[in-house]
Every structure is written in structure tokens, then in C-alpha cells.
Length: 221
Image (tube, rainbow, N blue to C red; front, side, top):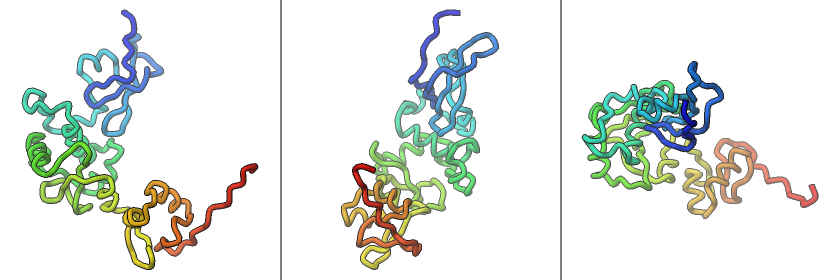
């Protein structure tokens, strides 16, 4: 057996190699722990990774049409990965996000599911850019042209099932919008909300829970 080829940090298909696995194969062949784009981990032989025989944790078999590079020339693009993951989280039960999509009955329309080219053409004609992510307008609806758009992180935060609503100056609004208007850091606001701490004198909770003031910090504690 030749010298070990270090694959840590390298990418093969949907897999990114994390580190050498703790056990080798039966013939002493090295195995590698990998992270799949769908969120799962997988252990694969280095030779199979290098030869292109292992490209995912297994979730790719749920994607019916993995058109080869020469058909659309986009297999290494961000848009292609978005297409892969969109289908995976709606069809692959081992995908870490399946419970929030496929298990809820959310699916991908046949036009997009069977053709990356159709999805790409829609995306490029509807404002796609590398700074945006795909968002369903009706959060309970499917991935299809009439129910999707390209949105910023803030727009997506406002459209989630678990959007937090608060009272700002006595008026109901989303926590995200309140933070925008009051120039409050959104991540810090969500942390304080989860901890039951007061976010601002102008913001009150809708669930009736008391908003605690943070305990004063003393340097010598």
C-alpha cells in the first residue's frame, strides 16, 4: 500500500472530508469521515472518493435527475447546490431538515424536480444572486414557480413558521421588524428573548412572561 493521501478539507461531490476515520476497511484501506451538504455525516473509502464513486451520504439517490456536467455546465455552481438541497430536504428521510419539509408534506414541483435547467432558467429570470436564498412565499406551500422568490436573510426570518411577534410601543410587530426600527442587533435580541431578558423599554412580550432585567455585572465576581 502506498503513502497515505491526506484528504482532510477536500471536497468530493456533496461530501467535504472532515478527518481520518478511526477504523480502516477490512484490507487496511483508509476511511474518511465526511460532512454531506444535506447535513448528515458519512464514512467513505478514500479511493472511492477520489474515483468519484462516492459523492454523497446516500441522499443523492433521492434526486432523480443528476444531469452530468456537459448537459448544463452548472454542476459546480451555488445554484446547483441549492437545487440539490431543495430536493433532498423534501425527499430524503435521512436529511437533517426532512422533518421540517418532506415530513410536513412539502414537495418540489415535477418541472423543477426533473430538470435543473428549468429551475436555473426560472431562478435567473426572477432575480437570483449569490447573496439571496430561495424562499417560499406561503410557508406551508411547495417549491414551485408561483410560490417561490429570492430573499435576504431578514426577509426569510420574517416568513418563518416560528416568527416571534412582540409589542413595540403597544403595537404588534415581528421581533425582526422591531429590531430594525430600534437599531437593535437581531442576534442579541433573539438571545435575550430566549433568556427571558428585557430587550428594550419599548418592547414587550406577547406571551405574558415577565421580562427580567439582567443581573448587574460586578468585576470581582
